[in-house]
Each structure stands twice: as C-alpha cells, then as structure tokens.
Image 1 (cartoon, rainbow, N blue to C red):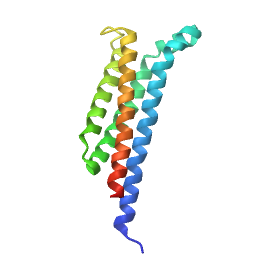
Image 2 (cartoon, rainbow, N blue to C red):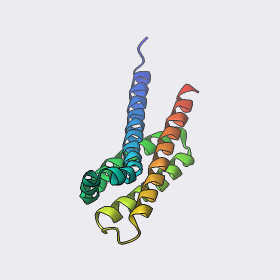
Image 3 (cartoon, rainbow, N blue to C red):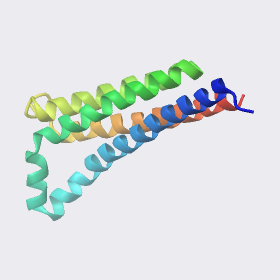
Length: 144
C-alpha cells in the first residue's frame, strides 16, 4: 500500500543522510590535508610550497563545509533534538573557520602555522564526530 507521508519521510531522511555523508567527506579531506601537510613539507618541497601558497584552498573548503554542516546538523536536530550534535558542530566550525581565515586572509598573523594546523585538525575531528553522531541519532529516531 502506498502512503504519501511515508514516501516523503523516506526521501527527506535520505537527503539528511546525504548531507551528513558529504559533511564527513569534506571534514575528512580537511583533516587529511592538515595531517599530511607536514609530511609533504618534509618529502616534497616543491609540492609543499605550492600548497602553502594556495591561500584560497582554505577559503574554498570552508565555503563547502559551512553550508553542508549547517544543513546536516539542523535537519538532524529537528528529528532527534540532541544538543551534543550542535555543540560538536559549533566547536568544529569555529575551529576550522578560525584556522582557515587566519591562513587565507590574515597571513598567519594570529598564531603559528603549526597552531593553525592543530586547530583545523581538531575542528575537522569535531565535525566528523558531529556528523557521525547526527547519523546515529537520526537513525535511532527513525527506527523507533
């Protein structure tokens, strides 16, 4: 038997999950970038200098991370009402934003490049954790 409401709920749930998976992917790219950069500097000076001079990489990545995170976490929160997800998202977005903006626009004037990488890595980890929790809590509500 076809139920329009059930079909609509399934489609909305699928869209919410897609944003979480996209958010996990983007946060993972950010985390990998931050963690592999020191190795790149050590083993490939040419590649490292190219990556370090690309000020806009951080801005572009942030431009994708922000809307995906906001859409995923708000859509998930409307279903499960877990503030833990919002806190993880807020901490992650704040850390990643501060690191990205200081690298791209403030020319590392607030703190060292090492501190920037640490902040971005911690922010990426918090975003990944938030997206994973969002998926778990949304799934739990859907199966109840």
